[in-house]
Image 1 (cartoon, rainbow, N blue to C red):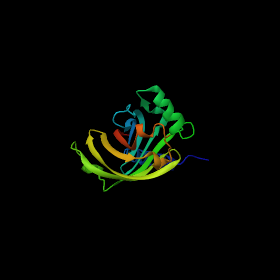
Image 2 (cartoon, rainbow, N blue to C red):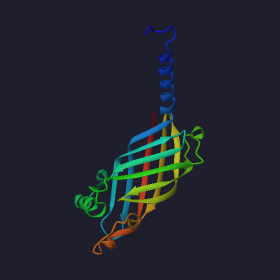
Image 3 (tube, helix red, strand yellow):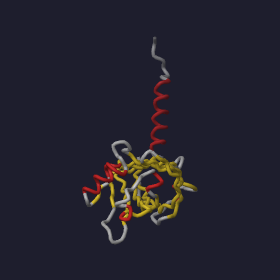
Image 4 (cartoon, rainbow, N blue to C red):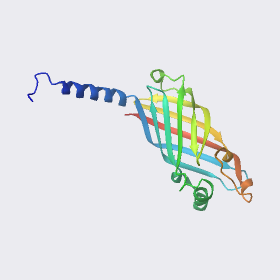
Length: 187
């Protein structure tokens, strides 16, 4: 077959690459997101852990956001507490991930500035084989090619069918405070 003077396939590749570049520019990602949770009770040892390896992806064309944290990535000050958390409470070998999928409501990325604005996020948190609907307010701002998000929410062990043994029940808060901090960079 003879090559044509007007190679259509070059045009097709150019269109595909152009659409990929446009689509990619609408995504922001953070692979070192910070999540901290605390379930401490006064007068007892601190029950607090954090990870700085959570991944978050924001698609500004749809305002969808997703985040994933490996449960074994959470670090406690006390290694025995970390072991009990992974083996007895979260069962991280069976349930290795915490996943959030949601939508930023009434969000317009083009109006972001260096000053934080409040944005509501509505979504579902999956943990320990269960799902919990969540809605919270995030502080969102833009600096350069980054969108910074900070926020907090409350969950309970019961939300995810996590049973706390009676012997330590008074040492662990009934409500778990979760804080997040993402620095999403344009890709």
